[in-house]
Length: 501
Image (cartoon, rainbow, N blue to C red; front, side, top):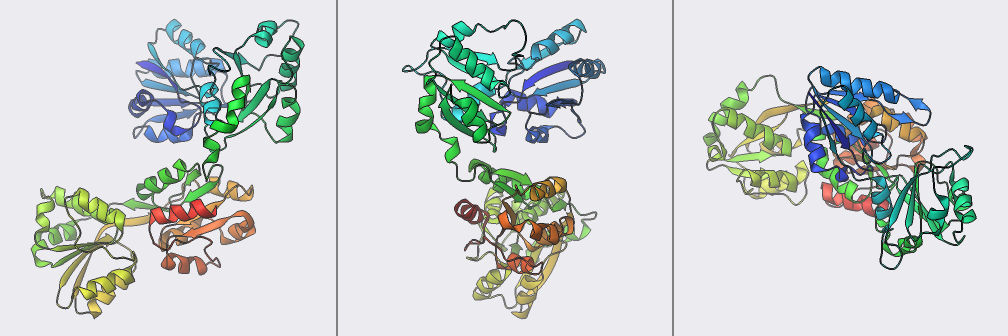
């Protein structure tokens, strides 16, 4: 039994440490806080018990004592427990108290530091906490101290007159008191000061003022908790070094409707641009219940002149079944291989196959034209694909004289993850774009989210289609795509989102 106190960092999922990620992937139980990014839970192993114990304002899921008892009890069941805490457990995170409780209960523990928001938030806002021209020391201070108590645990005189950068945690409620105390004890009212709201997350924003004006300027610009207060000359560097807030999609909420197996690449590209990505897989990719027909086709690959792959999933599942038979890429033999789209071509290259044909336009009609130019009359074609798919490609090839065997290697089924999140964002008018990568994602999305709800909140929402076939499906629901790339690829779609959101 063991408990790991893991710092989840300030919110950007890329700032979780490698050690923290590795422990999360091995833990039997994950106990996590409100401030920890929920993306980290994707690292959990199958079957791991995931328990939320977050605290937001006065709403406590569990008291601190209850959390302590929970992690002790789970550890004493012989389980490896990952206690995931926002920021760093030992930086105003009560991690020390939890560690002491574990020791008193005879439970071994390890603390895995996290990047504290006090460092990362200002850094993303372009505020280095130390700089030779401004400050050579830093003070981290709780701003949560009750201003009405008789005495203060802070040495306001030292804080006000020192040359340090001051960083106050949880201080928005007491900002007028903090400002007044610093000025009262000798700080120049014109000392630069800043607020950093939800630092490093897609909600991140910052503003700069002076310590005297900050209590008025901050609320006037809509700053609320959670916001860090940064005081000192280093704030002057914000205007020059503020890199994160220059990202083109920062603060934009974008829904990715592709199946989770396909969505990670697009989601990663959008996150690099600052977007808040809501993965909303409207379909799941499932294996078939029976693969006898696939195995028979693989054993007879020598009969085919062409193999046509229309998706990454088709390649993956076809190769999985070859492996089941003890075969590898050599089984393709002399057959020529076509790939619809660069992602499909790339995964074929990973398998050791350089496609003989990649169409210029990544839709079935473009593939048909290109293959007809290569003389398909009399050719025998194998088409590994989804169980349910458009029939344009096989029908047109048959018209051209080819013999086409359709080979289902996987199936798609509806999925409904994140439906409530999407509807909530729509109703708050906080959703900026929904992306559609195929006609099936359109159909499945509107099966889960009523077109009437979307129409009601369409003013601030853009719908993005990967290509004309998907656009036609959108039109059948009463919508015209606001965004559509000239090349029907995910990178091209992302580039259009960058320009138009």
